[in-house]
Image 1 (tube, rainbow, N blue to C red):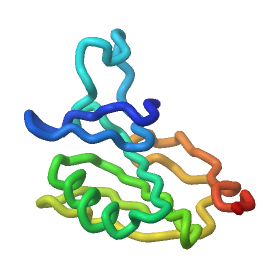
Image 2 (cartoon, rainbow, N blue to C red):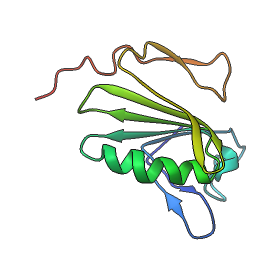
Image 3 (cartoon, rainbow, N blue to C red):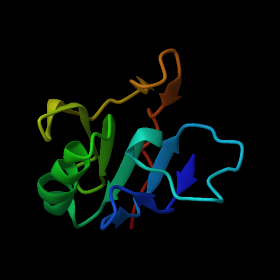
Image 4 (cartoon, helix red, strand yellow):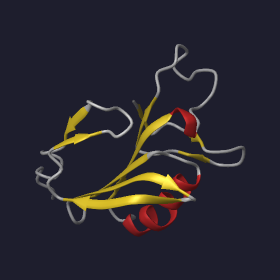
Length: 123
């Protein structure tokens, strides 16, 4: 798992998602940044940039074959799921407020408890 670390989508495009779950490598990506082939899941956290995340970042990630994207919408307390990129678009898209135990599609059997994600009080 990498936090706010670069992912190289292609020769000209490098992004810095909030969280990237990537395949394990012996050199821990010291020799190069992860590429789409290395990525299992990207997570973007959106406080005021939801439209940008959904309309710009999600299509960019889908075009590069990122298998799964989660967008945490802090304004609406929702988790937006995108997966199964086909022809530059995610073919599966849904949103949930009650994420609970959530499985990472690329890691069958691996679940993350997201039930407390939106319960924290904010000022």
